[in-house]
Length: 83
Image 1 (tube, rainbow, N blue to C red):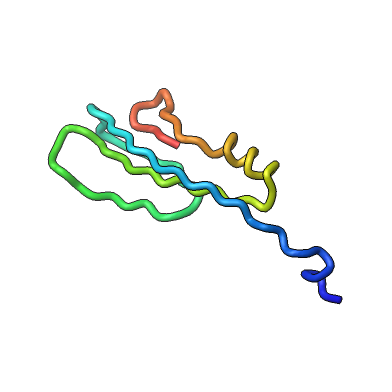
Image 2: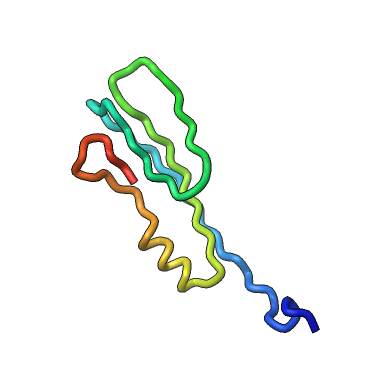
């Protein structure tokens, strides 16, 4: 009997959310990204526009709760530092 048939298949949970942020007066932006792509596009204007797609995947509800708590969007006290 194989390991997969002994343990069964755990259903993977997934959550996605989208946000839009806009900041004026920001000259430098530092992003701390866990995984995935970052696309930067120049524009003419005095603000930084950010579209965020956050995807969380977990093998259990407990792990999803931990992911929600540990992966967040925040602006640090330093100018232009986001994570």
